[in-house]
Image (cartoon, rainbow, N blue to C red; front, top):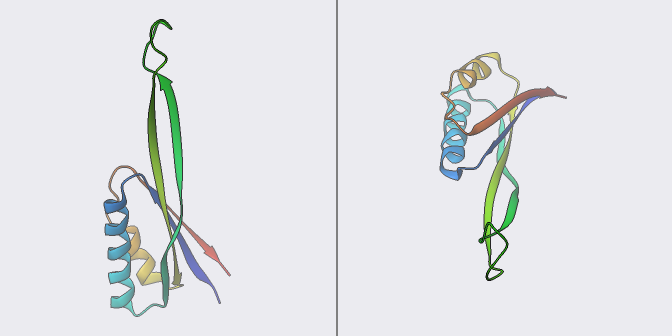
Length: 102
């Protein structure tokens, strides 16, 4: 059976969950089988920089971190449902990819 696999990623969890809820609403309206959203482990990108730019003085450091949250949704293949999902307004900072798998 074919299905559409939707991969979502963002640094903002609220926006990501908002899109997942709208996809869930579309799946309920069109009565399509849906699995997910499945949370995938969060990527943590860390950067350590020295506070003093010239190298003199106390050796103190700042730590910065960016987290990338990911979700995975599997939908039954339905043309109407996919068209509605394509019309969802995607906010800035959210990456979405849709692929058809068997």
